[in-house]
Amino acid sequence: MKCSYILLVLLHGFFLAACDESNIYLEALRQRPWKSVHKYIEVRPGAFLFYWLYYADATRAGADQKPLIIWIQGGPGNAASGIGNFCELGPFKTDMSPRNYTWVNGRNILLIDHPVGAGFSYAVNTSLYVTSDREAAKDLMRFTKAFFKIHKEFRKTPTYVVGQSYGGKLTARLGYFLHTAIERKRLKMNFKGIGIGGGWIDTSESSKQQPRFLFDMGLIDIKAFRTATKIAENISSLIKTRNYYKAGQLDYVMFGTIMDDASYEYDMINLENINHYSYSLLLKKLDENMNTFVKPTLNVNQSINWKHLTYDVYFSLQNSFVEPGTRFLEILLNRTNLKVAVYNGNLDAVTPLCGATSWVHNLKWHGAKQFFDAKRVPIRGERNGFYKTYGKLSFWAVFGSGHWVPEDNPTAMEQILQFLTQNDS
Image 1 (tube, rainbow, N blue to C red):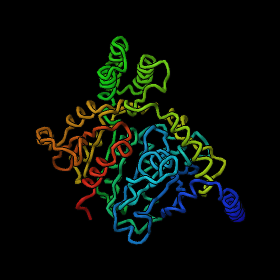
Image 2 (image 1 turned 90 degrees about the vertical axis):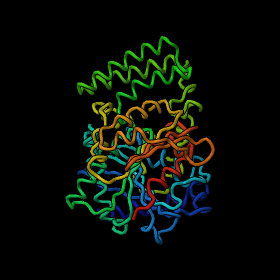
Image 3 (image 1 turned 30 degrees about the vertical axis):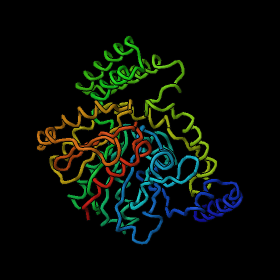
Image 4 (image 1 turned 180 degrees about the vertical axis):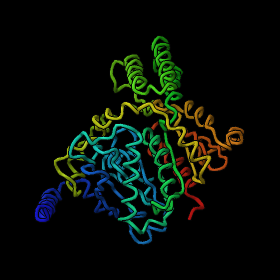
């Protein structure tokens, strides 16, 4: 086994040398060598999660003195190693040009390809793919425990979990698991808070608001609006009775109703950001660049065909797809001192801002009334939106942004991160 591993490393080295001259990713690294590590962690027998850790400001020196942010991508099945890394917040963009507003400036960023099967993560058998939010969060819990055993230098570092879309739902549950493990002295980490962007949290509210938002923006006709609204009402009723499987099926039907009416060609509408054309060409290019230029530089199984979305992973979680995550947020707000930052773009049709505004103000916690009455103040900068805060909860309405807030409005996102991580040690 040891000889086979040595042979794999040697072959990987030879392969790197062969592609070195024409690799645009390696050329980008030469111009700005960001210090990072990437490894696998076995979270269950035969199930491996891949992670990519960027050290703050491109150096390991003093990195443990700067915040650590764990990024959880959505989908489920979207790969953080590509989408989060190159499309949203990493040091390079999809075309390998430098990103001016990278999160790695002043912060350590930990990207996890999750759930098992997404991106470079893999299982020896697809039967090991998770089938519920609880299983998915448990894998992340096991991963986190193992990570801090490997990287002991970060145990005292202020650490935050930030999740997007479906990843936001998992972040709420993971936050509860992490807090509980720390309380029971089963985990050593300096856990300070969570961030949820475009969160698929109150799935009933988001489903109800999606048709209204698209209709108000002129993207669907009144017939499709009324049909989708009736479907959304049925989804809400099914969620109340915890019939998540049937509700998930109807959510897929509602999506089809919306897309069929919105355009003759799917590429004409972008639910992630209604002001942009579809990201399909961007993501296709990402798939190509990840397999052609990035994968050969990583010590991963080169036979893996990296995809921005692994549909087998997505469909394995259909029974949990519309299961709400609000109760875990309420537990965190009522029982812990963890910060909770919720942010949403005003051009997001996946999780419309009106839906997020509704569910965040309906959370049942001891500061709910004071939060409801709190005054909104402008996000720093010109027309970046508004935020309000009370206690440990803050809510950010980000203007000019869709589902990918870090990429769409990096100025507002920077203020959110500063607010989340300030005054912690």
